[in-house]
Amino acid sequence: MNSNVSSSTGTDLDPQNLPAHIAVIMDGNGRWAKKRFLNRIKGHEKGSETVRTVVRTCREIGIRVLTLYAFSTENWQRPRSEIIALMALLKKFLISERKEMLDNNIRLNAIGQIERLPEDVRQELHRSIRLTEKNSGMILNLALSYGGRAEIVKAVKEIAQDIKTGHIDADSITPDLISKHLYTQEMPDPDLLIRTSGEMRISNFLLWQIAYTEICVTDTLWPDFGKDELLQILKNYQKRERRFGKVET
Image 1: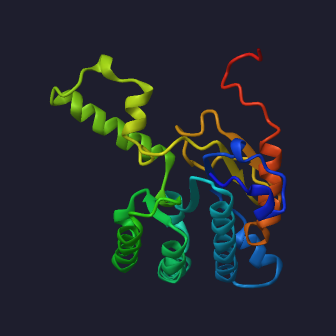
Image 2: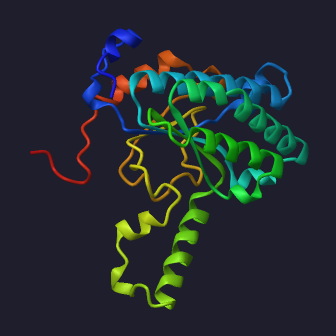
């Protein structure tokens, strides 16, 4: 972890009290565009610039895992023209950011129903994952075609199959076992969840994993979210007392 957080960011952050895993619901691209009488896709394009800023900042200060809610299972219900544009933007991002991920020791990972993505997008995604698989500085975890309920259903089906085939029995089912069947099985649960645009809901995101996650909701629309606000949120996070259901001693 970066021991020079204060000097590198200009903010007094305790390097020993940073979240290991930050999850972000990136909301507000459409409203940002609408306020400016622009096409919704312009909002998504501007939002991709924010992604770059947030990834760089997290890498600089030593965050181990950053999970970005990029496309949900429910987003497939959006107008076909918007889905096509979003997939094209995702493909462009995967190609354009590949060098930066390699240069900055960032490993790309993806969670969700990846098989539902267009073939050309899947190819670029798998290429970036393969090229960065040995990087150890930070995991950039993209939630793509992701839904928390679908993830839990997947885990239940896998466990049920293991019981059916006799590999385990029902008494073997524990929270740890369930976690091992989730997309995030090799990652710590998020310490901090950030949602932009002021909406007070989880939106089917990491439902199992955020049981004791600290939550921050900001009214800022995602395209306007930046380094300074992220650092301020982290300063506020460091003032919180995380008891995990226990009483203060």
